[in-house]
Image 1: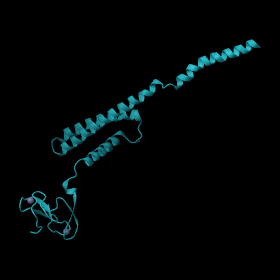
Image 2: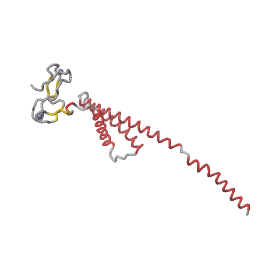
Image 3: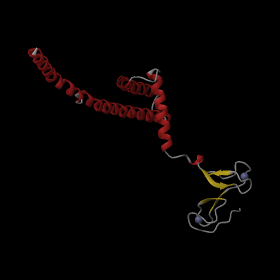
Image 4: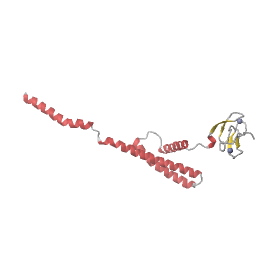
Length: 186
Ligand SMILES: [Zn+2]
Ligand SMILES: [Zn+2]
């Protein structure tokens, strides 16, 4: 009876001794959790590479529009860049699984477009699209910076300073360049 008790005690002790490191090892962070940072790093790297390619494609498109490239060169270079982008996208897909459900080709074109829009938004707005807080004195239409005449009623809205030649809008009271007092009549 006593020996049975001792055997049980011993086996509990042995089990505890065996299980203890197993249980507590599990609570330690396994070494592979650290690898997630490497994954996100290379993902970032890939995204950066991809952006560079899109930038190159954008510049290529621009050069082509400017007539700096022949149709043949342009198509060849663009295909090459897109092939590079495809490779990178494939790697990115492997890392974060493709949630897009569309072909890589579509995805690339879409992302080029989005990239271009993003860059455009950051670059300067052309003067023709700048609307001033200046209204036509005749019909009160809002005028754009380059308007010489009101596009609604034809009233002349831009003049030149008689002192320095600086152009000014009809409502200006003083020349923004030389401070000359202005008269908005011909
Ligand atoms: Zn007008
Ligand atoms: Zn002036």
